[in-house]
Image 1: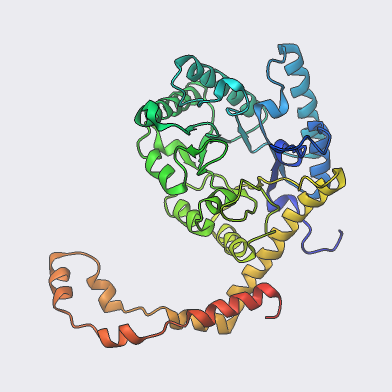
Image 2: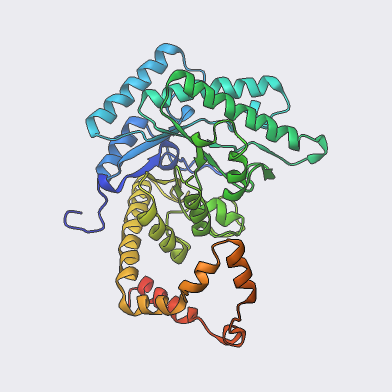
Length: 388
């Protein structure tokens, strides 16, 4: 796609997981529709498409239970592919959801032996991630939840979760690992209810950790949509808190199972505002945590991956167009009503509080004024539809 302004480049910092393009099309009702991909082939294919990096769960790269010699052989081949293509591994994570041992939680299991296994597995996965260059480590608590609350582990579960994260932060410190930890929220699936289901709940939980400065969030577009929430609002909350450490981009129909659709495939306006925020306030990897439809063959997988990156770049161009539209800028300026004197009184001091209490405000005007949001939204829609 030479000369195509929407073609991805390494400077875009687009990444995919081995588990995303490597999704074999299995679902709860059907067998795989695609063959398993060799991670080395995945690195080369993503590089050819213009991606910057590739991420993985520990088990995506090294099968669970592989002997040490086999582990070293796999890692060596993968490193050679990274070196040959210039691809990087900016993020790694642990699969704490597939093993039947984690059926009732990993860090939050009521069985101390399971919690110990989860810590053991994660330390080894952290070692692997750092070995391959990861600077961010993501925790998605896919089994950290419940269907039955009668067992009474809600508060204990949160305490065990906190203990595990504190332990792993101390381990990283002791090993000298330059890692930031990003916690990923999700409201449900595969459990009936997952602990810490939204960005806001995670931000509150992070404040209770021993090393909160090491921890941020990894919000995912689909997960907020599953809860009926706004992903740009979640992003803004994370950015405002200084905690947007990583981001997962995909798409989702509200109130459905976790679909992991191609980015921009379903909610174009929400995707536009997502890109607008990321382009202005985030300089980290832009990770597409999605997968091709189960209907697709191998060619469809790479069409899916290319589509994610292309749509992001198209929306980035439209976000710039919004900022450059004079009529829209004027409408936004009219929407905002600054008042230097009142804003001064709203900076607290006893004197300002006394003066503000006595201040007469034009309530009749405030009650009847229309801020012009319909006009603003229509202009945004016309830019998105390509007619403005």
